[in-house]
Length: 93
Image (cartoon, rainbow, N blue to C red; front, side, top):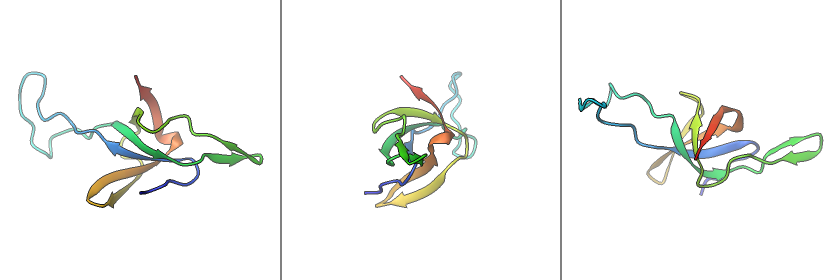
């Protein structure tokens, strides 16, 4: 398993919609890149003034991330992205 370091978070992007609201099917290139992801694993947090500042999100949370942020990683046939906590914009409840 991948264990992020510092204030980094391992995420897996949710699949984008293949149809518009009016029912038009989009090709793979026309689909907008999804911004909602599931948190798979979190790092320990960032060390600030000698104390570890924990990460706000937790495993299993659905989050919204900045578009095109992070580093893409393929591990055991699955695509993941490692993002910094600062690239996480919101938690979806």
